[in-house]
Image (tube, rainbow, N blue to C red):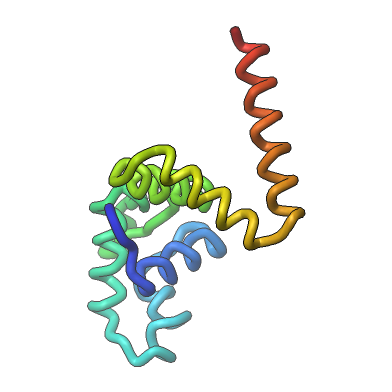
Length: 125
């Protein structure tokens, strides 16, 4: 999956917001104003389906696409790919540094998430 392009993210955001969608509706919603063709939007939907980020089923002559992953799942997939390409300690340090730059509230939220995950893990054992 690696990197997702700006148009791929636009399509995912559109599907997350609108639920099921066909290419024609999506093209009307954002393709026309960007000056991109119906075929470009269609290719983007198909790429996301191939990457297993969207599901699809046939309705008449058109495919209807729906989300296969939500925002959180996509973020986990992308972060997971990035972490797999580097040392885990380096990745964690970079993440904590980003959280620190975002502000103390973000570090507090990170600590709370870690504590909750530890508690849930302890309870499941």
